[in-house]
Structure formats: structure tokens, C-alpha cells
Image (cartoon, rainbow, N blue to C red; front, side, top):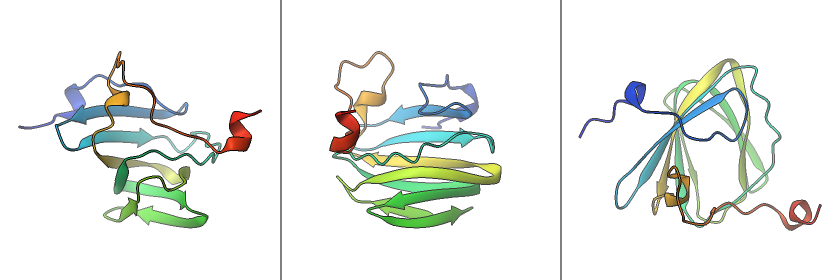
Length: 128
């Protein structure tokens, strides 16, 4: 089955300047993300019970995972273990396009989903 991202409607985005599109199967979900160079990143780490793979298809993406900061360029892949604290913290001067694969699927990202949001933020941020 072909997934044509150009024909898919955008879903909610975590930040202004980014477009997200979502597809899911029974075992894995994928989010296509296109982020403008001017997008604002708050750097807030979060975690969820899904393992996640991030594949950069264009541009540069800066991330953190469990207090380690790294940059991914076109063709590079990052693995984020389930329940690891991670965040996208910036993109390069031409922005970035990347895919986020999650297993099990992130059903909470489906439009109008009744599945509770899977994101958890650090305790100090939840109390503020």
C-alpha cells in the first residue's frame, strides 16, 4: 500500500512552523514531519511507552535523549527507547523533514482519537 504524504491532511502539530501527517498500521505508526527553519522549539523533554525511530530525509534535526544531545542529517537514524526522555530541540538553516516510527502504534495521534495522550512531561513541569 502506497502512502502518499502529499494527499494526506495534516494532523495537530507540537509547534508553529511544523506540519505533521500520520499513518498507522496494526504494529507500527509513522508521522511525517516537515519543519521550517523559523520554527520555535521549547526543548521540553517528554517520554511515552512507545519505542521510536527517527529518520531524517532532508535537512538537519537536533535532538536530546536522556541528557545526550545529537544532530541528525539526511539519511541518519536515531533510536529512542521506550520511556526515554527525549525532545527535538532545533533544525538546521533549511529546516528538516523526517519520519517518526513508533511501536506499538501511537493511536493517541489519530484525529478525534479517544485514546489518552501518551506523552508524559517531567514532574516539575506538570506542577507549574
